[in-house]
Amino acid sequence: QVQLVESGGGLVQAGGSLRLSCTASGSIGSIYSMGWYRQAPGKQRELVASITSSDRTNYAYSVKGRSTISRDSAKRTLYLEMNSLKPEDTAVYYCTALIREGTRYYSENYWGQGTQVTVSS
Image (cartoon, rainbow, N blue to C red):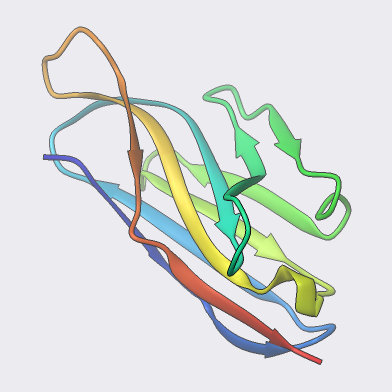
């Protein structure tokens, strides 16, 4: 069974930085694209950043220039470094990954349980 576990969230002052991590575990055949989404109270879940298996990245306009997504394939870990944090970055951040499990011939999208990021003004 595949699991994604996020860490690194917390309370930070505006202007500060955080580094989120997400590690995949279980019977993993291949990990393809990975990404970070966030959901603020009363709002829809939105894409923050994504990265392909060839390290091509994509960022939401709201975080572009302030965030860096990266992955360590050997560690099966995804990272999101966020700088110059703003109160509007407050949300639960979710990791997602397209994974082919074990010996299956198809891939599925998996989600982590989320990690809270709170930015105080």
